[in-house]
Image 1: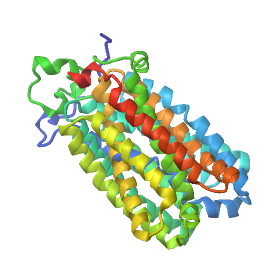
Image 2: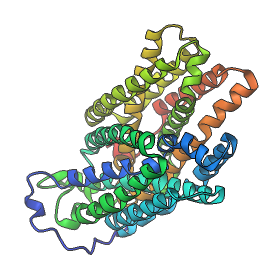
Image 3: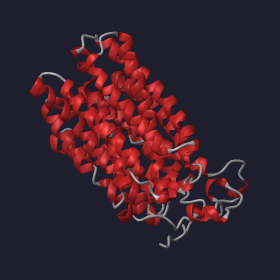
Amino acid sequence: MTHVATETLPRPIGLARWPVYYGWVNLGVAAAAMVGTLPGRTQGLGLVTEPLLRDLGLDRVTYAQINLAATLVGSLFCLGIGRLVDRVGSRLVLTVLAIGLGLVVLAMSGASGVLAMLALITLTRGLGQSALSVVSLTMVGKWFARRLPLAMGVYAVAMSIGFMVAFPVVGATVLSRGWRVAWAGIGFALLLGLAPLSWLLVRRTPEAVGLQVDGDATSGPAATAVEDESSGDTLGSALRGGAFWVFALAASLYGLVASGIGLFNESILAERGFPPALYHRTLVITALVALLGNFAGGLLAERGSLRALLVASMALLAAALIGLPHVTTEWQVSLYAVVMGVVGGFVMVVFFAFWGRAYGRAHLGRIQGAAQILTVLASAVGPLLLAQCVALTGSYAAAFYGLSAAVAALALAGVVVRLPSRLTA
């Protein structure tokens, strides 16, 4: 059994007497941290793409190449950050990351050259989409075990609401004040908001502050193996099991589909004869249904099986991909948007909850980081795959059919794969 050093931080006064379990406080900061990854995400960069291209005089091909290189290099930040979280705790790591990302975003708001933009976008991808995401997810897994699926459902809802507020605020600022002012505002929010909040409120584990995991008053013998912060599978043992690859690849394939369709959604619907206004309506439908899917997924995972939730998600995604090339009416497009929202909500909860529940908390950062790097790489490949398909065939249909077959294969793998003993106990 691997020993994990306890956090050498002053114990917060009266923490054990709080009316709510302190893990929920950590969860709130974790959700805020995930929203803080906005400048390093495709959707966040999409808010400033057009004015940035005009400002710097870049063409789309050059910018696409910059984005691809930045995403691939930035994905490497996933691996080292998990080890740091496991060794020194999330409080210090999260604070340093918030400061680092804030400084990078501020620097990007003043950048004027292609090489500088390449370096800074790479750092926003690495520190934001990769590293900060891993820390945010791991924080929740360190504080919850038995109630982890429910906690991840609440986390997903809080995070989704945060993004739904952040996107229009940043977008409105870009339109009214310019992308540089909007980006500078995000940088100051990270430096003056997230960083001090992380240092003041975040704690490493419940055991480090004298609490029981999940907020239980006592922990019986059956729960000891799960609740002990020093117990858990290593990254190597997780990688040797089929469950890691099935769950990681399922989430990655969903990310590939979502990133590809998200970038070209307007073009995909135009191919089926629909106007741009319908594309904007589908975004709203998908976002709202995904929010409900987050909460419903958390409740279902709490009371049922993560395997069943994963298989159902992959089956629905395969059906949506097969049906998308054949939509002919607006209600069919709306139905597709609803299905994608449900799938997104479910996959998010499964991906967030599976690692801590399946492999324990001792090496959760490393394991979560390895899974995250696969999702980041897949999100980079998605748009390129769809673009190449259109260039070769003149349509998106072939890509959707091929992806649906891959998704269906993962659904079948989810049915037969052997799960870790922690999940089957």
